[in-house]
Image (cartoon, rainbow, N blue to C red; front, side, top):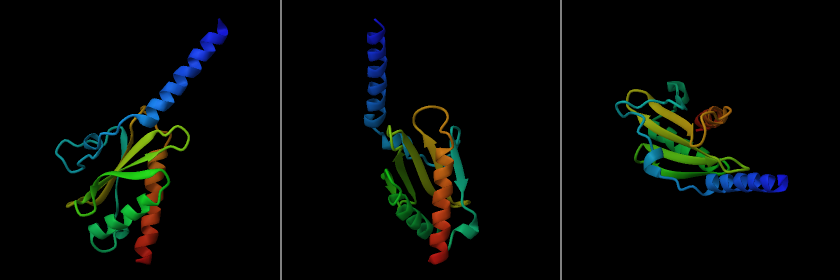
Length: 146
């Protein structure tokens, strides 16, 4: 009897992991407009880059950020473009493939802002904040080189 319970528990874990990895992504849900009235970063991390982190025009900074995101393992663009002024990427964890979403948008009054959040659960162990820190550091390095 105990063997069956263990087997059912393992099957449930595997099914959950498969769902996390294969659950469909609705770009319209995750491609948040950071400048929309009523937007709130609840459940996520919102960072707007300081003016000294943005060399030249915000579109150029967003283009450099797009290259940084593309170079990030397990990250792909799901919506938007540099020309649109807003891009959303999904980054998946290595083992299970938990999806985290990051939107970068040029806001007229704040410059380039980034918003990162997880799809599953209510706590991400600091993963999204760490990714934003890494992207900011890489952007600073790229801006300095550019």
